[in-house]
Image (cartoon, rainbow, N blue to C red):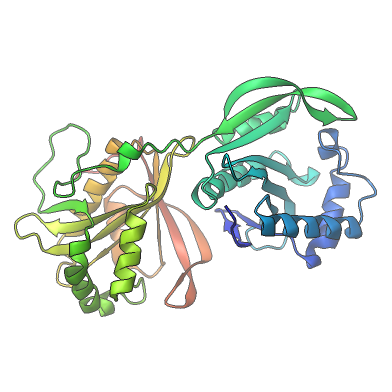
Amino acid sequence: MRAHAIAITTPTLLLRPLRHGDATRFAAAVRESAASVGRWMSWPRADYTPQMALAWFADCAAKRRAGSAHEFGIFSSDGRELLGGAGLNRIDAQHRSANLGYWVRHAREGQGIATQAARALLTFGFDTLRLARIEIVAAEGNAASTAVARKAGATLECVARNRLIVGGRAVPARVFACVPMMPAAAHAQPASKPVQGPRRTMPPTRVVLRALQPGDARALLAAARASRALHHPWLRAPQTPEQFRALLARAAQPDHHTHLVCLRDSGAAVGVINLSNIVRGAFASAYLSYYVFAGHERQGLMREALHAAVRHAFGTLKLHRLEANIQPGNAASRALLRACGFTLEGFSPRYLKIAGRWRDHERWARLADGPQPGC
């Protein structure tokens, strides 16, 4: 369950490992919060120094290398302001479990920062670290931490006696937990049949979606190579047999569904739709990505395919949210998302590396209980 030191972004936050240059402002944030955060945790002190911060950073780095903890500083999205800290610690590799902790400096409390960071770390824990369970433990009386756990989607499982030491004495604590809940049956579907959504009358479509198969390699690679000019600079579809095998391997994972879009009449490949980083439990969400092959663009085929993929996500998979990220200049993709009921939620600078460059992206999303556009 080891992972390299990475940065995690949300619409307004940057979570990254703490570095040597952060020591002075980290110590200042701790001293500022000695009374508020220190009420529930033992380490925040009014005399906290940069040297203490550096010792903590070194301990975090050692545990990250060992895979036993992943601690992050919480920063504003531009990285200029240190807002607090959060992390996954006490990682148990055998049972794939961890504890989630968080704190926010006194001046920025009550602004939703801890909730946003907790949600991001739950996604990181389930998607990247492949954890099966993440706990949040809040001392009895810590209303702020309890509220964050609930807002992050954790379920209260029990009140444990003498669970934490606060102010030198053992106190009871509320134990919350999240699990990914990804049943294997959710990924199983006949490869030759179109994706099925909720039972309701739908107009006939010109396309069907089916699971990607090893025998699709030649047709998909030929179509992708012929589509280089169409796809540039927005994406790079698989160009080689090795890249196709990598796509096929990802498609076999339970948190990744890859659908080949085909013409209903001829079976010709129209494009590809991916549902990736599928998270169950409190999130019930996934990322949506797609591309059309040259010769099939501007005919409404991918709009029909995306409607089918959305029905599959919200109907068969019982997801709550889909997010799609597109580059600001990709007008065709923006129009497609809008036609399929997605709403622009935010903008992330240098969000994804494409063709060797970090590129800005708009973040579009649709909820299962949101507006239902016509098909």
